[in-house]
Length: 177
Image 1 (cartoon, rainbow, N blue to C red):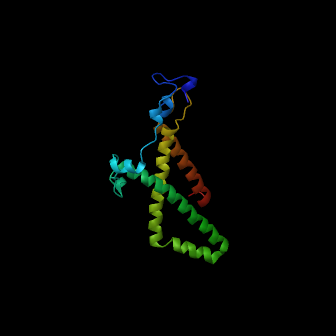
Image 2 (image 1 turned 90 degrees about the vertical axis):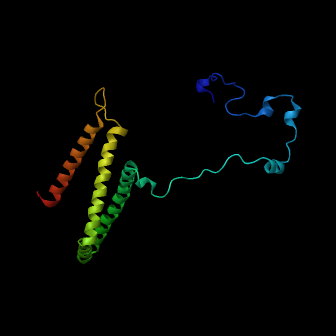
Image 3 (image 1 turned 60 degrees about the vertical axis):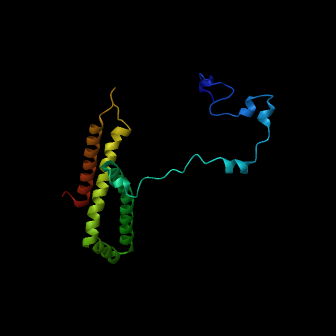
């Protein structure tokens, strides 16, 4: 396909890009249409010139670079958000099952290993949210005027909105604490 219906410069229209088919380009040349030699002989005679690419990265290569590590932590934070959502859905199921099931579930959530796990999960969820707020201003610039807003301003606005909504939720749940 040619760009805008035109022929590229320095590229013959008939041949196109790449190596092309020499048989079709040499009309009337019987030597070009001669039978090919036996393929088994070609394999035995011609040495293999290409070799398989050796993968050079070891497992855990991303742990050595801080940027890759932070990226992987952000992606893990997304998975953690989904898993934490399943925990909250399970809490609703236990609440529907009755008071004793819900109380047993809350007692499980109050055990020290689960509390430590919740602290780690909370940190990953906060990291996930903050890094996505950083990306919003870079990946999709917000533009109200001729110049788009700097990503740091967009980040600050998002964090303030996040804190405001979180404060409103805490106020609604705990009644003004």
